[in-house]
Amino acid sequence: MTKLFAVVGDPVAHSLSPLIHNEWMAAAGLDAHYARVHLQSDDAAQDLRAMRAIYSGLNITLPHKVAALSAAVEASAEAKAIGAANTLVAGERGWIAHNTDVDGFEAMLRAAIGEVRPGLRVLMIGAGGAARAAAFSLNRLGAKVSIANRTVENARTLADQLAPGARVGGMDGLSALAAEADVVVNTASLGHALVGHAGGGIAGLPAGEGRPLLDMSYGKAAEAVLGPAAAAGWATHDGLTMLVAQAAAAFVLWFGIAPDQASALAACRRAVEARG
Image (cartoon, rainbow, N blue to C red):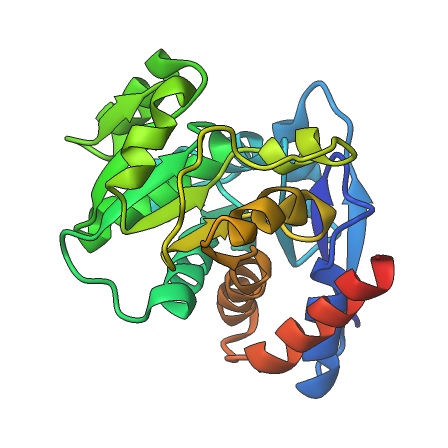
């Protein structure tokens, strides 16, 4: 019997996860299929529990990552610490929750700068759900973290929970924080707000002087941030490497097989280019 897997979110039509996973499943000769599930729900945790009767594994995207953790009967240390799950694995008693966004973020960071040395100065922009895995990862890697966010109190809460000792500030202080950073990571959905607006970019971003600037999104949303940043001298990187790496970690959890990330990344870039 064909095993079923899916990505669950709202919205989800744009997701490249089916492209990635179905290619890997075919390459491994697995009798499995991966689909998209658009879930709008007042009780997503209960809906995700019910999906265990049909699916052998799920990837979870916004806005259901917190609900995914609640839907599970077990959870990894990373998922518990972050307070959210992006991967559910079928267990005997129910779902087992994981957060492979940590693997994805670390792969993106290493692709941009190589090995991460303790004391690396990283400015994170944003303090929402997407920032939590990055903050957890950076703290584990021994980085010196700063967080700039529109609501300073949210940045302070994130620092207290996942990046003790991090400097925090509002977006009006971004320029000073970025000037001192070795790397800037945009975790906020700035690009989505900037798409279609003249100029775009991150307000107050200083000259990059060749330093890396990473954006967790990809496609038009990432380009709205990364295009102006590149013009200002930053070495820019979008989130496709993170997307593929977190998918690969999920694939290993489901099947115990390490897939070909390079081919999946190339396929994703072709798909993004085709979308224009």
